Image (cartoon, rainbow, N blue to C red; front, side, top):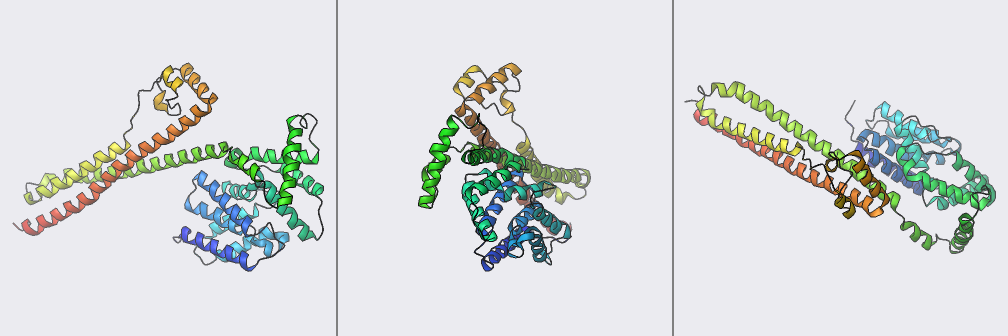
Length: 419
């Protein structure tokens, strides 16, 4: 299979798709347009970054996201199939293998309603396509969807009828990836609840108390103001911006995942340096050093090379050598909220009862919980900084030392080899 530059191809895919939408602009597609596609691409990229997929899989999802709605401008009735065919046509001759093209087409086809993804890549594209159902932009996007449906059918659709069909659609929808279920399902549930409140079809037990107040104060009033002003209510936006817990959780999770991946990469690089230099040391000891009496002029270069290898191995081992704290904490640490209970090094010598008590206290207090998460990420970064600093020294010693050692061997052979 030819070596494919997926990064360069991804840029070509973006340029082609953007150009396609601009040159095939249709006034009737007020929802399925470039703006929607860009939002789907952004959502797909966000999900892929969470799962840390390899470059080829990212390209599959990225391309499918860009092409998934292009088919609307070819044949709206079978736009998924047409989008898949357009993607295949574009990728032919680019060096992308048939397996990758087939995976892209399957991702697009999987978005046919009801969605039917067969693997993680298809699940990501499906979730990205309907990402807005679980966001605060749902109302705005739903209005555009209704407007497009009216244009396509050539008749007005009442708010009540559209609301009923939307409720039915959301009730049948679920996100496929764990990431989207955790991030979006709660907001999707609230969006559905708002629609039901407005439609008056919530059960009596639910349609009471605070919910009645919600529909009277927040839904009817705010939507009337939005319709009059022609723009989203700014106070509601500000209110939503003050509740970033879900986004904060996602940031911590992604940051921790990235740190763990970087730590694994550092360990892998260190192991490579240890193995390479160990082989060189073995060769020096078993072959060259046994014949130094015969080739005395190589003594200094050989010792120099051996020193370089040993120093490189030492720094590589230091980069991977674990540092473990005492493994205990006390009640004062809990009361002062200075201990990170998320790191095993702080509790591995503690009893289960003491640890459970500390965890329960941490989970009860917002600042203690997020303070622990902050400490965990911070000290992960500190460990990473130390690892990569030692690893850089190891690589520099190996690189420059190897050059000096080789030069010394050449000088010894040229000036002293004939004696």
